[in-house]
Image (tube, rainbow, N blue to C red; front, side, top):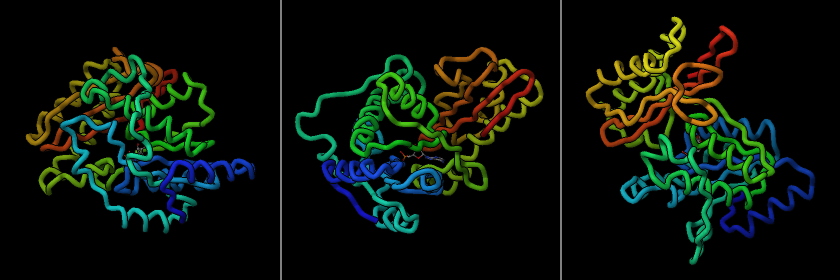
Amino acid sequence: METIRTVAWMKEKAREARAEQRIIGFVPTMGALHTGHMALIERAKKECSPVFVSIFLNPKQFGPHEDLSRYPRPLDADSEKLTDAKIDGLFLPEAGEIYPPGFSTYVHLEGLSERLEGKSRPGHFQGVATVVLKLFEIVQPHYAYFGRKDAQQVRIIQHMARDLNLDVEIVVCPIVREPDGLALSSRNAYLNAEERKAATVLYRALLAAAAEIHAGTRDSLELQRAMHKVLNKEPRARVDYAEIVDAQTFEPAIRIAHCCYGLLAVRVGNTRLIDNMLIEQSGDEVRVDI
Ligand code: AMP
């Protein structure tokens, strides 16, 4: 596996692949790779060649009081995982390569980036959209793979791709979970043993709402109540939000109709965790994907 550290070099690799009519797959990450990341990579490998993975801990998507400085950076272990996965190239730029002195251009999505995660983490989605657009320009992918774990993020990237006529197909992959239901996340490493146990409360809250849906409930307030009931029983959990939203706009949905998300953001100890379920209704049939 080639480790590519500069923008110019990465662009050259992309140009070569495109000149050979090859289909470029791309998986952007912030490193500390886990099975969730590897599932995106496996999917990309099935559909594309070459496959490039980036590891870039993007400072612009972290707030001043967030966890940038303590975010895990196990680069040797990550490189080994990517070598074993037989990807074609790891794009591993320094921050100064992506944001040279004088950098001052940002992508801002009105509305969508100001709600929920955007409200709790001001500037976060501007940082995400800006870096993802830059990475797309540098890696030139035909297909880019994202996890549904970060549902609002992937919606924002789809929206940006549409608004800016980007020539890339966004592929959304399912959430990968631990056997006890906790969604895999690089931030799970922050949890101590007690918090790790408590962290399953997000999954349990989603299950409780899903059970209500299967029992016929369509009213969002009732579903939110079902989630809060589970979350409130966990003394280590502090709820940031537990909402049912329209899957396109991320505006609150009053009732389940068409396609919605149940979204959770919960602090367990000092660690902020997010999770979600996708709710799809067609006719009388409702499918809940957790
Ligand atoms: P990150 O390194 O946290 O920026 O994540 C990189 C990509 O991996 C994003 O598209 C995430 O949505 C995706 N991802 C993270 N955790 C999971 C998971 N548990 N299941 C599926 N995809 C995930």
